[in-house]
Length: 129
Image (tube, rainbow, N blue to C red; front, side, top):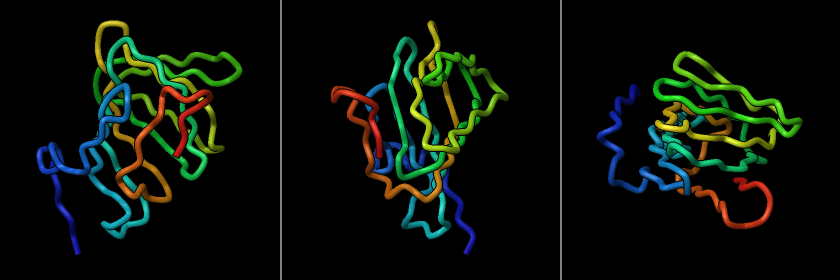
């Protein structure tokens, strides 16, 4: 069955997740039955998050703002609207919002997120789920 859902539909619900340095609006999750997740992800300006997804592969497509992603070899990749980055080996990485503006991404995860996952950006090492 076709599913239609808007960003406004998930704002203020359990699918609206404060992940520490931004928000993740989970448009599709595991219970939707499609096998992958799609999230509208906002990374706050001026923030830096050490992340690693041990149980998921992720691709992020920038739709607004700017920021950067840095791999563990120190390579820094500016991210702007129209850019995509792909984490296909459970890559540990830094994700940063722009200096003066938020980074807005469409994030796709496989397998699908349950929808309630949150980052722990205080614990030592990379936050993972």
